Length: 544
Image (cartoon, rainbow, N blue to C red; front, side, top):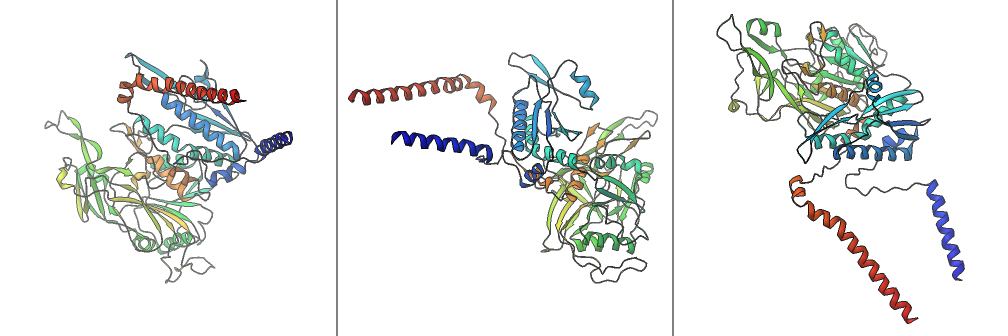
């Protein structure tokens, strides 16, 4: 009988082992679900037709933080391989590696660390992964480096974004057709030189077209996943408003980057001041119907960019000194939206405040960008003066004034109770309510633009006076990706990993105690258990 029991137990064990190769069961017991993939990721991985090879470049003599990043990367690739065909291999860094990696456009990061003996150690790190799939290859950047965050916070943000980074790369490799977005023209918008970096950033994901919709067919925008309205200066016609409205009703997404104020930077530079008046683009009622209002005013903020000001009384010997320019606020980003999560400040100039209106309209509205804790609003009509460069904190009483808002849901048409404009070619009735779609409204066109210096476009968000790079490119790219995201991938940016940091001072002071507890105590416990088992067995068999 005992022999039959042993055979049954062995048979059950063998069956369980066999089933484990067929059915994989995994439990993620962490609070932040660190080891779990979203359903969108699992669906995409299951749709892989072939094997995706992941080459991890993050290797070598890494410090504790980058070892943690590498371990997290290997863990998420291992989790991805459960649902799709992925193969990982480590790239062996050699003396000739830098040249071959530089040919791919990959630049290393130099880490300077101070060791316990006081010496400075320098380490070269390549925080990238290469994914090859069906003859195509793309690069995944593993490290986020956001201004204002500590090294540990940046590494933690990088770990949070790993799933999104890999899924985004696989999504691009699987695409057989390039989706299209349109930048509207015809209203004195900035030229291609000042939107060069915007088009370059979006061209990684989309085919970017530019053009006017004046006197066009009502369905001219239907082939585009999103439409960008970038800093128009003249009013939209009734025909254009109707085309945009019905495009939204059919599920189209729009990024509005519009000012509520008209001003002249040329007059400001030549005369030192410029009047500001309300800018009427003919869009106020339309946007109000959608649930937002761009106010005819400008925000000022103590947290702002500097501008060079001549403080010399001698015109023959100018003395340019950087002074705060409150009309160029450095905007804060929200952690509550996947568009702006873990993102640094966004550079802007002449920004209008935005209000969410409409009450209980069923729309999901989120603030994306806002001013700091010391800001104020300049109403129109008014004046902007270059001499206004010595802000008094007491004169800036407002906090977190919204200047960019995202909206998601079903929108009501601005033409629900109106006639089709004369001259519009359409055979369809007016749609009064949209299908579920998305919009983003920004109270300034400057967020999307780049400066041009000596005929060459500068990067979006780059301030040539301070030499600092801000997060405009990431913000605009994420906003358009969010607008066009039908697979729900952008929601992966909301994933959080709790940052649990050691108290370095306390750990150093109690280093000996920790070493003793972590090495000697486990040995003593094992010895105690072994001794207890030995005594019990001895007494048991002595009786026999």
